[in-house]
Length: 294
Image 1: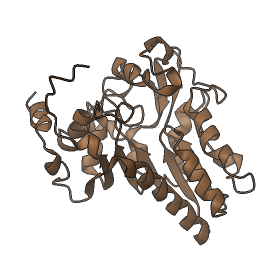
Image 2: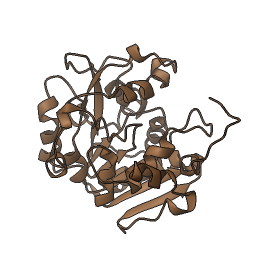
Image 3: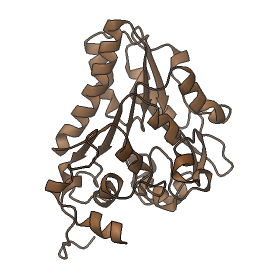
């Protein structure tokens, strides 16, 4: 409670200050978040193509903003034969069966729909370089990333629980002391009820609070894949459809300024070299607004 109270009282002008100089925290206008994210990915893809070298990216839920990345690739005719993609997570059912690539609510389906298939056919990465979770590869997924030389970049953002990818703080599959937890790799995980509630508000599930529509388990990378990446970007910018209401306002502060603990998985970035971008909405002071109600 002391840590929570301290983080709750961190003001907007204090949120960028951290004892780790390699943790670079910036507060930016809400409308700039997508631009920063997409242009960073495009820069890395274009530079790697120009230099004729491989680029391995671990991607968060491939939301519609990835269409902008595909448009840039098509407009500048960037050959993506060097590009290797790994989604960081995927839903699974109560028995641990990973959602098939054909399931419209899944992250693998979204990656193909919003990114891979939106790239002109002659520019797309080969199918063998576009990976996604399956029931068959879940136990090998982290090793697949390691065997290819680890990720060049991983992009992420904290969930309401502070999860990183679907590394949940209360999942029994990730129950370990910090030093052991940091070495853990991909696995099936039990999702927190808070994550089910958060994701029930996504457009793919009708923005309705329909908890039963969200699968109870997921496949996910582990902390090891994030730690071993050569570059990390963490984005804190989720609000309720562009309003001032943001459940991320509190967990962002805990992730960046609270204890480093598996109980707040994104807090691992405090020990690493990471670029963090926080939207102005998320960085706002936490203050009561009694006249607002819900």
